[in-house]
Image (cartoon, rainbow, N blue to C red; front, top):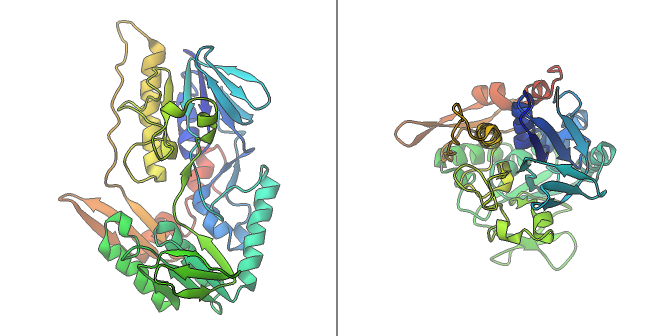
Length: 368
């Protein structure tokens, strides 16, 4: 039974999960500008190691049994006509529309260009640059900066690698001082220079970088792992700026509805829910939104489902690999504490495969 038309804008972790959850309950159309799913978790390694170049790309063609995937760019949500307008002029009618356009990440954790070939070429370019660099600077000591620094060090044991972080400790946003210490100990044991309280900006000369104290660092290659930007400019340009908060995130209520409308939802990195923007969080939001969308589509009736509030995950497991065979895993435990687990757990849970077999299965492919 298909109760209505659901258009999901964005084929990232949240969008894929939501579309799959609703595939048997509604006529689902998933819209994404990419022709494949981009497994961003594997992107940092893909930017360093040639063997991983195409690993992040998983086709959408087996995701939905009843719905469809449209490759295109959404430019407007026409709430009066209840249609999603694509850049081509095509209009997709909806009973419910879901904004799942995610966030833009710094390279190499980005799908560069518009096609798989262009994105793979960008990865190959990063690989060549890293292979030829004498000094690589990574700016940002959060999970991505730590992971990328470790990947570069293992790939280039002969190069100088520096990790500069504006905070007082690595992984400080996670709230686990022990995890930050483990990350720093691993990096320094592998001859990565860790610079804390070091807010970096480009220097006056090409290849130079300056911290807030005026110290100049010379590096022939740099990567900035200093945060993300929600992909919502298109909403502002389309006249929906009132749906966004000051940081550009879509404002949602407790049921993940957006714009004060019953038929518009926003899930994943794109919304303003106050929690760490992680893949498990995105999929949890997708699951709750799927329930609420079913409730909305069923309308009134004796067996009508009531919408359920989404509860933000203020404490969630976090895994930070140090290459394919080490890392640190943070697991919340009762009492407000965080258990910090080491290399064996991290390797099994994420570091070795970067969850690629799991995501391939989610999209209908074999693990290998």
